[in-house]
Length: 112
Length: 113
Image 1 (tube, one colour):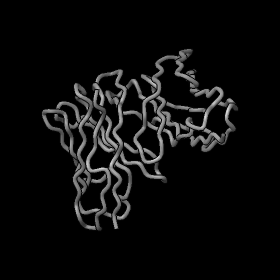
Image 2: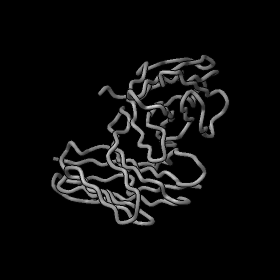
Image 3: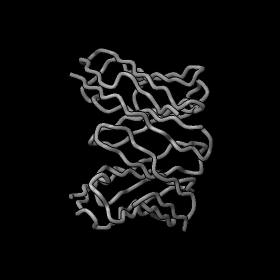
Image 4: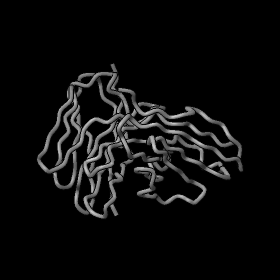
């Protein structure tokens, strides 16, 4: 069974204080790993897709990296508007299903 | 390019009633997936439709059903509502292929009293 574990569950940062969120996964063949951002009361907003170990993608203050067992979402010099819940999901390569398995998310609060 | 739309955004029902939620994916997207999100369980997959056919199904009781129309719009129905059905119901659209990225709508907040 595919599993996704995100840590920490919650993270409080001061504005400008860089940090990383972790997503550990167990999947029978990884097709893709997704990062989403979700604001309260809204649907998840797509951030990145990573497909193979060693791959990295960046968007503004966010950088996502991937290894064979985990992914990190690095946040550089965060701002209060980066406060949100960050969700990680994996898509297995086997079984013909394209349905991703989601982690429980990391709730990030950035204080000004 | 218009995003994924869901209607209604908020809904209050009582136990035993039924409810129908609607989702329109981004134009050109043929896959629609439905998820239930609760504080206790996180995002849980309900089912996926592709070209009007249910392609995948999660582990939910038969009270939860859905369908997809030829224009890719999808509806989800929950019959005999229970208190535990209170949740944010999200739909996500995608191209439906092997490199699918799912684009979520804003959700429908269902409260069952």
